[in-house]
Length: 181
Image (cartoon, rainbow, N blue to C red):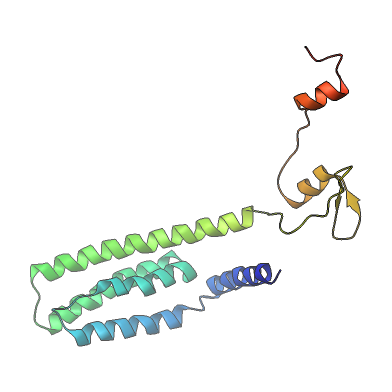
């Protein structure tokens, strides 16, 4: 019970954060920290995989465009560091372009995954917990304490639809005269 409440609260919070762009200032602080560390380390040691953290957070919580903005901005800043270090070779240009394309693709994919997750959350209606069911007539007791036909209860709490038929065992038991022997 507590777990489902927490999950619902987190999913509502996630939607609120996404709508309000709440994490943008925190993401920008993270970008500044990562770029500062990158500058302090120097041109010889490169660890651009850290760039994926703020790009991923921006794409997940604030949308594709924020992620793409960081995916372009961070490699350009790194290229500017190369200029400051007086190392503007063709390798620096190529590395900057490769990073822009890879980070942009990463931001795009993270946004697609987040949108897919959101669509699934809105589409899925699950039956959870223990369902009190009558062992004879198979009616289910609903939240208000009334007994409801199984098909109606499940149809009301999910998108499942029912089609009725008869299994071979029930056909033999209830209609033996129509079953071929």
